[in-house]
Image (cartoon, rainbow, N blue to C red; front, side, top):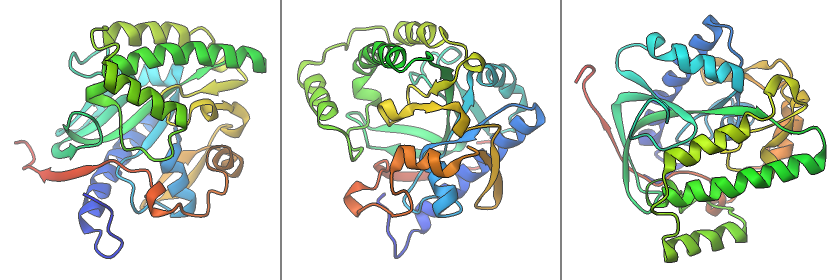
Length: 284
């Protein structure tokens, strides 16, 4: 389902479903005094569009690791009927490292990957982890993590690697071609790889670190961010909601996107290849 600037009603209906998931997430965080931040295209949308980027089809939020772990403990008891929480430690069939809240009554056929996926409408929740204090230390730690991230992606390549994301650097395009050709990693244990990555991520506690990383974000080394850009967070308008984002939003968005107020060309618009959206009765 491609973005259509003349009649975008189908995508807009999905955005409103996801907006409601965002509302539920934020209410849980506020109720339990948990830190979170809008990130990626969601934060960009909040500033440039006061809501969703018109062609966007999901929401991204991130939580400091201590808050993320507490959220995992409480969220299942907090969700209303019709919604569920997905986490790789708790769900045998869930193979993403980051977590999700999903609306079980909305099914999305996503053809972005080698294997077509039918998933429930989602909100992605990423953990934020500490990094070493020195620049060389951060780079060594990041690329060590990235090696294991490569093996993780290789282990679930057919199911989860987005083949259509624009703007990938050349080396990533070559790695994807290599994995498509060789099927390297197909027999690796995805869950064990995620557990190994998590042990490495926990090496530098978030609250003691000056810099943080969202390892499974889309922007590689740009995911290493000085925590002062986040601060304690500020509230921003996002559609009908007020959601928390980085205090220094201009520096944060410039770090990731450069001239973030100028929309990209059509060929560079980052979106999933959604082919169908199905709505079912509540409680069905």
